Image (cartoon, rainbow, N blue to C red; front, side, top):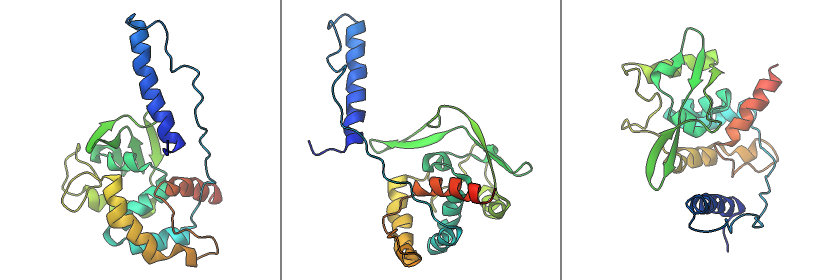
Length: 201
């Protein structure tokens, strides 16, 4: 009661998997979580920022502006960016290899495979090379490319509070066009990347 549909479905999935184990172990005859009606997830319309809005947001983010540009121009998920290691950046071929993702669970940052469980190669726009090279400078191949000022891994919740939300307010995206973009999220930059790629052919 009171939980979002996605939260309910996730809780049901975990509980159902546990009950499947109980069935396999012969502890219960069948899984009572099967065929339970679950709330539907209603997805909102994806939002796309223009290149001008991305640049305004990046400028407002100060030293973390390159993080916003990386997300908006490569289409990486935040967890994939947080887990990107130096050895996975190929400046010669202008490619990023996405092989890991970082997820915060119970206050701990866990590194695992990306959402699709498959490694993929992503084009690195030339405009990002200089800032990414600075991030990689002096680091070992297994070091994380993008970290906090103190050198720790990025955590989405902390980064949103410290960087993203203030940048959205400072950039005042709702003033750029009629639509209110005051609640735009970092994941919207993934949609933006796809939109900008289509627009550029």
